[in-house]
Amino acid sequence: MKHYAVIDTNVLVSALLAKRADSPTVEVVAKLFDGSVMPVFSEEIFEEYSDVLHRDKFGFSTSTVDVFLGELKQRGILLETGQTDVVLPDMKDVPFYAVTLANGEDKTCLVTGNLKHFPVKPFIVTPAQFLKILLKAD
Image: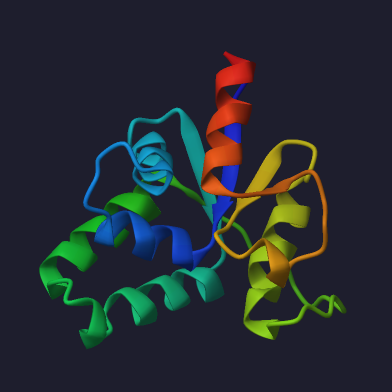
């Protein structure tokens, strides 16, 4: 079974800042790049990835971010969702939720470090929870 995931920007930032290769965020990102998980995103999500990862405060080099995002885009599924009437505590999170629903919450997890920004749903998980789901599926 193919696994699909919408990855919240905070997961990517945490993975790139992580000091340990066995941190859940690093392991989730590794699964995106080894083909065991298919990333799903919209243009709006991808623009947020680029905007956030290029911020000076993180200290990521432009070339590293560009290569990272290029690879992610090449490996993922670009999905357009249209308008949604979902209201979330942080409205910048709506595109992530909408793409998850559009791809099918029965087969797609929204992986985030900020569960409190989303409704309590079984498909909205932390990186550590997502890794457990993947282990059970194998």
